[in-house]
Amino acid sequence: MKILGIDLAANYSSIALQEDDEINCFTQMHNVRERPSWDDLFAGIGLAVPNDFSSLDAIAFANGPGSYTALRNVSTFLKPIAFVHKLPLIPISSLKAFAMASYDFMEDPSKNLFIAVDAQKGSYYFAGYTFQDGIPTSIEGEQVLDQASLITKLNGGYYAGTPWKEFASKIELLSHATPNASSVCKLASLVDFKNNVFDPADANPIYLEPLTFKKINE
Image 1 (cartoon, rainbow, N blue to C red):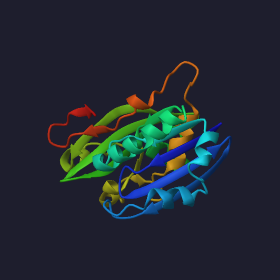
Image 2: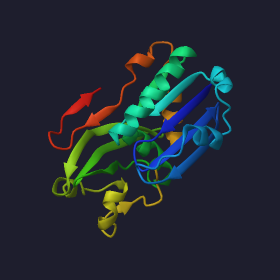
Image 3: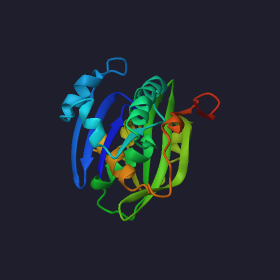
Image 4: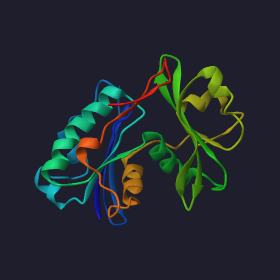
């Protein structure tokens, strides 16, 4: 199976191509407003467009929470590609993908993992996971927290994400864990394509509103 994965949820752009057990990934850190072009991203994994699209079995992308403008642009860009080439377009939680990427840094896989990502304006995207055979399962749903609420989550387990750095002396911080599109591909490869239809029209970003804490589907 050949899957194209894309993660542009925050201050990075990551693209990956998974073919069976092999994954080629390209990630670039940058300011949120200074993303590389699509041509540069595709070149980073050696994908020739549009010819190589026809060889894909699916496209997956991190659909949030994260930078809503970036997420919407990714969704808008990928929908016609998936439609024209009759490909499933699979939305993957950016926090769950981050958890998947963090698993390789966990010495004790039986412990829980808590992800936090800066949502700006003093807010943080947060979620908690447990693992079974290396696959993350939600134990605390995706939510937006202020710093006071984030501190209440320091209950043990592993932590990944820059908002935890100031508590590094008190927690097991996976400081080397970073989100990337490889984990988007890995999660998409677990999807049951036979019993699920991933219509490109339904692949929308998810936005967690910092002020009202309300989840909105585009």
